[in-house]
Length: 213
Image (cartoon, rainbow, N blue to C red; front, side, top):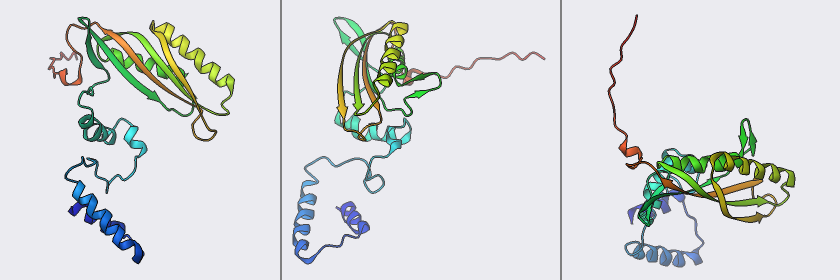
């Protein structure tokens, strides 16, 4: 309750007289329901809007995962891929999204990145990649030649990784509502390691060094 009052005070709300009663009723209803409904765990007064840093892999992204996503989805994996048991075998399952700019960069493009990034996530779970799904979100006006080059890069990267692209989807957004191409992927692999690979399993090893002069 104090948090909401401080927020309202900090925003310096100026309301016309005829709206004051409505505002009081709305605020009262919000306060009454606060004990009944889940409250957003992210400090709204600090981050009222999503920032680019929330998707950058650093502290803010980790905060978003740990404080919002994980409590809402109790079964979310805390690693690059989830390990699932199916028919007595361990399978790794991962998903990723690629929104890079520019689309082409030294050494590759968004197509190479989509395949290799997803394969890498499976490898980080000790899995041999088997199958990928691939979805395109295309911006209206994207040159067909650009799309063709990206598709050929995806096919080449999949062959090199010995992984099959087995399903996908395509959507087109209005001109100016995208950045050329966005790609989302999902991947399935067969876990080959006898023990799970996980950051929490990393142990410090002290190895004696022999210095030669």
